[in-house]
Image (tube, rainbow, N blue to C red):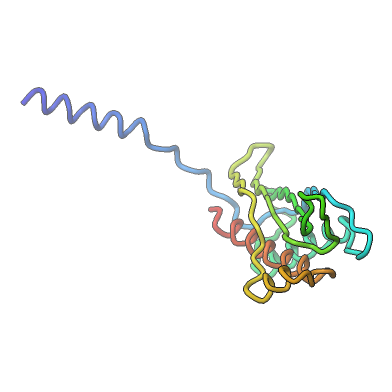
Amino acid sequence: MKRIFALLLGVLFLIGCGSSQPKVPLAGKYKFEGISYTHVQRHEPTKFLYQSPKMVEKKYNKQITEALTKENLLDQNSSDELKIKITHRREFIGEATFAKSDRMGNIYLTYEVEVIRNGEVLRHYSSSELRFNPGVFGNLKGLVGQNNDDSLENKAISANVKEIVSTIKEMK
């Protein structure tokens, strides 16, 4: 009986030590000044002109601000500050080979979201590298080498913004 009681007490002790601390409640609305943006591109196209990295950054900022406003998540007087770091990577068809192409192949996203209050990080989320999936017809367009304008990238930005805002909404 003593052994069972000692074992039960030991298990309860280990369970108690393994439990996490309660999270600090968030304000629910955030102060947001803009993203921290990194653009990665390993090939410079010469035949087609794509939007500049500055333009891509502006689109992310504008769409994220609009989405956060629509979801009623912004308040510039909030004590909780939202920090978003985005790494946007363009991949061109054949860029890893000797037969490089100026047609866009894939768009990849890596992002981090932090909620900060008085210099202390209350929540942190870091994604792995995510590849934009343009769907069946978008993939077929890529296979036949028709991605030579900004449409693929603009669709990727919109989808990536939805992913980021969804992550922010889940932070509680």
